[in-house]
Image (tube, rainbow, N blue to C red; front, side, top):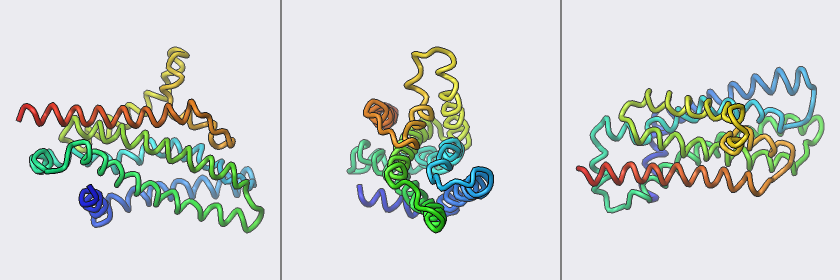
Length: 227
């Protein structure tokens, strides 16, 4: 499993994918930080940028997940995965962990904004930690959905569009019916930047992540059984 994680991380950082993801995210976050936090609001609330950051994730997470399995199918290396001594569960988890590590690295980079704000006035540490935790849970949910989308197509662009489409659709589900409130991940995340760690919301995001990973394993298992 460690070998697969290393392989995935090399794939991210020996190609432009990982740098494109980190670069795009930090450029957009920097624009928000400069214009809103330092400019308009003139605030030391580090967590404010993550409200917009949650929206940015919708469009950048698919950059690192679209190739997870679709590239394997396109390059004909999926058979190697299917016949690998590792179980499909471990392979899926390894790809998920590798993508999550890329997000964690990116999240660590955002602490630069925290350092800038600390020069003027120390931001609230508790709220900052809650925000970073919520943001990581949201990113993990998005990653799992992106990996699932990648497992059902061999075209990376289709996987990208499918992931973005599903995530955007989730924004509007609560407007259709209040019963869908728990399906809007971005709404669930919105409590974390206020320093609120709601157990139900945390469990919902973790459950969503687990469900998408399980669905990915089922898709791969069914494809393996027919080969």
